[in-house]
Image (cartoon, rainbow, N blue to C red; front, side):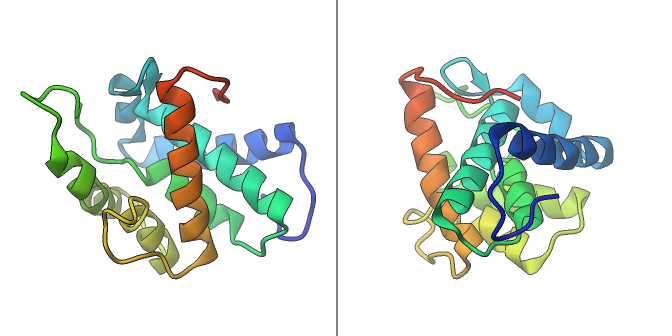
Length: 161
């Protein structure tokens, strides 16, 4: 697992994310996220892995003292809503404003979560969630999720695990 204050390379970060993902895939329904498209041609699962990777890179580069385990788990579960949001009559504003609450409820049904992990999942859509994150990990995911979304929508370079 990654530790604060240490500089990691891409392969070490990817290995840490894969380890956490494997545990989550064994315990709950995370594998279902592979069947839903998030942005362009990326599945929800790949999007969450992409966000987890960028969260770790940003934290390392900024020298943040974060809990990498909680950051990675929160990132992997931040879009754990378990449905295809594209199959609606029009753009679904309820999805944009409400999927973080559903993701947290689903994650709580399948996994033991820390308070920090719950906050990461629940508040990752700030400012749409109104209440902002209060932990560094929460702020990192808010930023990383938006960057990854832009890269994925415009089909720019991204990490696939």
